[in-house]
Image (cartoon, helix red, strand yellow):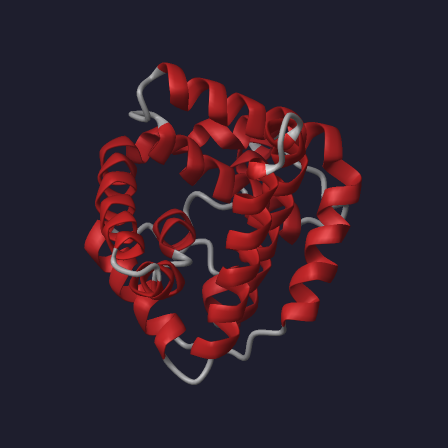
Length: 211
């Protein structure tokens, strides 16, 4: 996978474009993700997050930047790979965070785009992890590390605010995910972004409308 230079300022610009159009829908989507994941003991967390990545990528690629909430439930077609990715990657990163934090942050950075790659490029668990590692580990590692730290700060710290932390996180976490979405779309080659054969799930809703 060919990598391009990551522009963090563009991540914020792209994220804001989608966020300001869809703030209520993003709030609802992350609430649904949290509730369903909790009540299914995290079994559905992987497929739902894969769908969330599809949803944000499709919105960022559209001219009107509108989110389609049903995109979030379209990745059950890759149920077991996404379940496997969720627990395998989550366990590895959690273990790394226990080891003085830094190893976990590095692993999180190297695997920052695994869900996006699995959904967008239709790769398996290991291939998605390898592809994200390859995409990040080149000359753009430090910029991706900075993006990962920003993501951790936004999504992690917001939830720790006393009393209102959970409510604040409902607004902040979707924006943090949009930052990662922009980071991925910036760095994949143009051919990979636009070739439908390589991204069979992207813009699935557009294909359905044409049918």
